[in-house]
Amino acid sequence: MTLVVLRPDAELDVRSAARWYEEQQPGLGSTFTDQVRDTVNRIAALPARFPVVALPLRRALLHQFPYAVYFVAEPERAVVVGIFHQHRDPAAWRTRTPGSDEAG
Image (cartoon, rainbow, N blue to C red; front, side, top):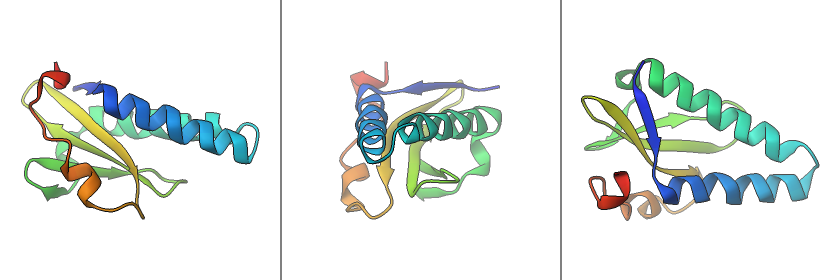
């Protein structure tokens, strides 16, 4: 299993989306966070199975929500840089450059 680290921006993405879903329907925010957790577990199991969208970023899609987890697969860990809605401007994930101090 690969260690998966969420950068602070990615954690904020999850909280923000979960809050929005919870406002739409009680319990849906928890379902969203469960889906994110499941996706992170799939990344931990085999990060290389996910497609590269722009070197070095890979993308893992959530199954029940129109979101994707963007991450960098490093030798010892995978660093999640963002969790974005798929209809969001693609430039949004490109602004989170891997390797910054936040990846820590």
